[in-house]
Image (cartoon, rainbow, N blue to C red; front, side, top):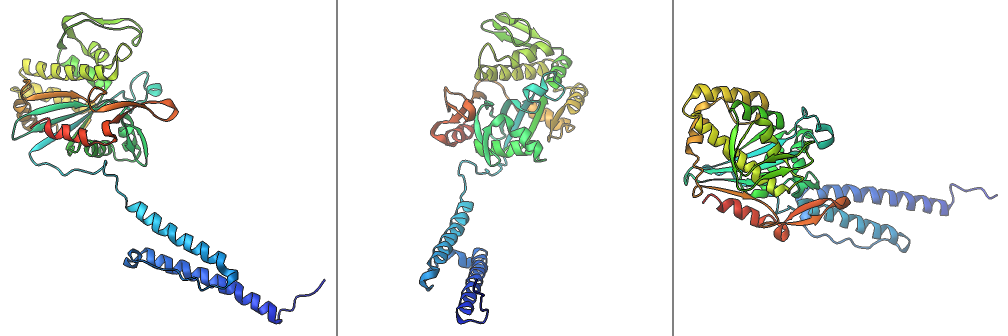
Length: 354
């Protein structure tokens, strides 16, 4: 076998070409880094092919690598216009209301303790004195983090990121186009306690309501006047097998109005001692970033909200107005916005309290 002559002319030429390519590649990476991190990156560059015939492969690879750098930079700068954070409006108050199963529920583990079965936005214009309550269905398919998922997982995702309800507030702000000021998170046990402390609520049904299998027995309410304790009120707002999520959202709004009416009937608004007792219960069972100990502020807002039809509007986002049904990953039922943008939803939230 022939021995290599390390001092031969051919060996030295190969050695120079090898190190030349190494320094060329290292130099290019260094220049690319500088270009990528300075204003020079926005200028146009032309890579001249001054390499020998045997180095054309390296030239082509380097040009491709430079193109990837430009693509990644431009791609990173893209902004999804559907998810733009709105500015806070000084004369408008928007509160996100979230209802969760809660970790104390007996079926929490299999049903998702932190998924929001209820999502509503209460809005109040301090100038027009008009208010609204809009329900957002849990199957609404939106961007959560870097992926898409049903909006009922937004609160849980926020907890995992150690942002709590702030993440859900930000996401709903982007979807609705109105700045969410505060959030209230209520679990099912807290809801029951509140109803019972109010000594029940009254609702009027135009037709009877029946849920066959969800509660282990046939839960039924007759048409006409009904007085509900905490458990019955909870069954009424959570029942979904006999109807759909849109109907359930209407029932949830109905119960919220019944709570407001009961508070008025008990004259809690004019009795700080009584309302303080209710607030004390809420503070132990409900999570919120509202200063619930500011009794005067809560009383003033309650007095200001007029629930007459001319001053208070209720809406449920559904397939009958701004959403359409589709199929997500693994065949999951999802809801998407009409026009595949949030424009119409944002318009609704802007106009509903004008």
